[in-house]
Structure formats: structure tokens, C-alpha cells
Image 1: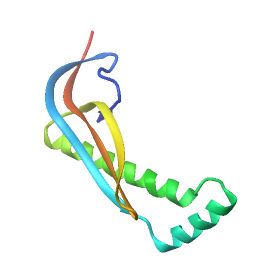
Image 2 (image 1 turned 90 degrees about the vertical axis):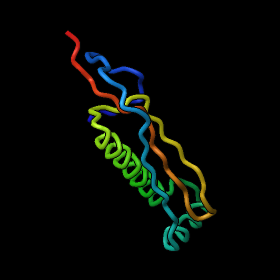
Image 3 (image 1 turned 90 degrees about the horizontal axis):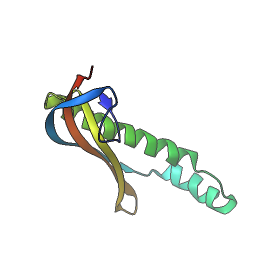
Image 4 (image 1 turned 60 degrees about the horizontal axis):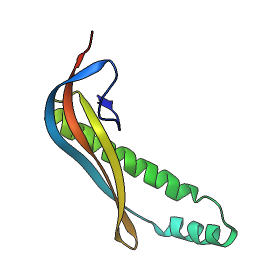
Length: 107
């Protein structure tokens, strides 16, 4: 599965548009990470545990979007976007979305 943020893929033409696809996940914080984050707020710097947690959430959302595209018979997703929003003060949603397409090689 080819996944890109652009509206086209060099060397390919869009054969068929399969439609909108999306995947999402909601991640909550945990107490251990919150304690470490509070300490980091005092001294500054990257909160590595949160960075890792959000990266894992993005990968889950992209994986679910890919599954949605496969269900539609697509072999690529174009115009992919990622968004994050707070669901509660302790949880965030990551959503990945794009347009599922089938491709053919250009000559």
C-alpha cells in the first residue's frame, strides 16, 4: 500500500477513486507518565514517553486507515492528513484520513 500526502504519485496514474478512508485511536495518559511529565515541566525538555505514546497512536491510526482502504480494494491512499484533538484532559484522539485509489503504472 502506497501512502502519500500528495494528490498524485510520480510514475503512476489514478485508475479509480475508491473514496474517503480513515482510521483513528484515542490514547489516554497514565499516572506514571504524568509524574515524569510534571518533573520535565520543572526542568524543561522533551517528554519522551509522551512522544513515544503519540507516535504509537499515529501508527495505529494509519494502520486502521490502511485496513479501511484495503477493504475498499485500494492499493494506495493519497492526500493523507493527520489530526490530533483532545477528547478529555487526559486523552487525545489521532485521526488519519485520505482518499483511497487504485493505480496503474504510467509508461
